[in-house]
Length: 342
Image (cartoon, rainbow, N blue to C red; front, top):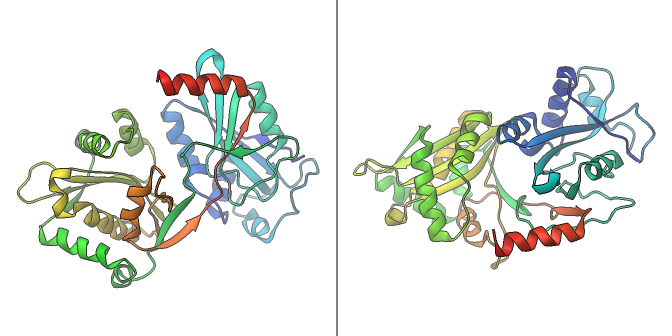
């Protein structure tokens, strides 16, 4: 079995940061920045690493990638696999463990993580790696959550502005021009109160559950690289649409969007997306992730998927999130409670 250890020292965390930011599948959700953000939200985190000089494991010998990044990791042992675990506590000291868009590995889930999760009274362990992992003694099943998308659209920002516009759907380009004709102006802001009011209206209209206002405030203030853009009309003092995103490791990511339905004819959300792409490109990002789509017409993201389709980009698919259930009876009870009581 692959043996992993938990890291906490500044030296190890620095090495881990290099590893994630240079890994072919490295991503925001396995980063130190995401760790900091989750801890500010009140969640616990742990980072596990598997290194080349640990107990023999089924992991392959150091790859060309590992050797190429060894110097950037600061010398010493080379990291072969890793996992940032987000821990949520619930009643009676029970927990759920989540490894969002991870682990970063190409073999198996380290048994150390499974052992520690069980010790921590973990109900379920969720993983959503690329590519899929194997487990030897524990069954993985498809998760019913919609935390990590099964697909997304990624727009290439290395192209010129004209080339980025050209690869969009004609409706996307047209609606951007409509917004420009209405005189929609996009500005960067720190006004979470205004964004949250827009979001509440969008949530009621589109029937999705929004998070607390403090969550969005924490996102903006404590996730490095996060930003908020608001769209205004010349005739209105208050914004008609808003967008929250983040720039991480030369990639822009769209996260939250909201708009006032009364001003839908202005097509402000389209201009918001276009201005966000230009902003991310100016900050050195080579790609823009529209963050979550589905081709399934019954999927909760079906409507927003049609909106994102207008901006073109390459569709990237991921394996479905997997779940390892350690306490099936308790999980059924808690699931029923949330469904009927809340």
